[in-house]
Image 1: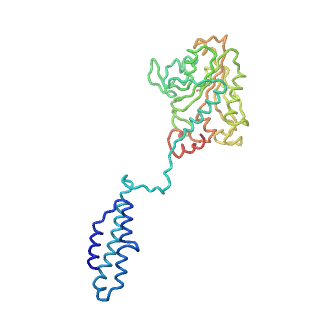
Image 2: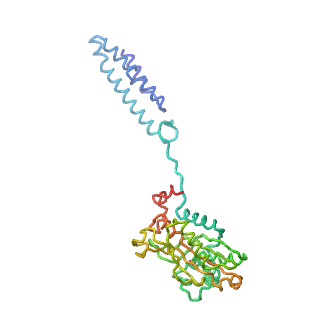
Length: 340
Ligand code: PHE
């Protein structure tokens, strides 16, 4: 028996187990109840007292060595895991696939586009770096209007002025410059204003402006179109009101408010306790603007409107801080997964 113990001990020293299967073979051969060492213990029981004395210690040492070896083989195998060369455990649950989702601002933008497309509006695009004419002058901004100041607008060059557009109205000017009425178009896009970043303001945001120019377009068309939009976006119970306002490029002009969807009229910080939230500016296109674009204001009239996508989104999903939209925090963004 001594010889056998010696042989097995050498074998154990030499054994390699670089896969789960070879480790299992080792376990069956040396450690399990039916393994060789167990057998030796069975034989040991039948030995005489003298013989037992001779091999007992060695046999126990062999058993201990086999178990220690098993442990170390197992550890080596574990540490190799994840290094790519090890077998795969097909019984583990699969790793969940990470599929992204649309940004909430895009969800809203697509919804706005969808609503106006059904009314016959197409989608127009234009540059974010704009000259003075398309962003201000053609839109009837007076020479000393505050938006023309550095504190309000990001200028890239002065004389002649190049700037980051402050609204997507520049696309209206470009469109009217190259297309004869009827024009029915919306202009989604990013716009820039020189504002300190806070929960309520940002140096850039997104707008959708709209323009409808044709013969006999009236303020009634404007009201009905935006009323329809509000109902499609927020449901048929939404209330809408037009408040007289001023823009250099529209006359008459109106601010559009909807009933507050955060507090339903009870009063909250979003509606500043008035029950109404402003979502858009609007009005009849000023005759000077039509003239600036080569359209005869005696023959054609038009309405225009502009809304902030962030604001529309805030009321849709109750997002209370503008900064969340551009921080790329996955905990915020993934909440919109189920909305698609
Ligand atoms: N251009 C305006 C703005 O950025 C929005 C607007 C568009 C208002 C069209 C009236 C008509 O604030």
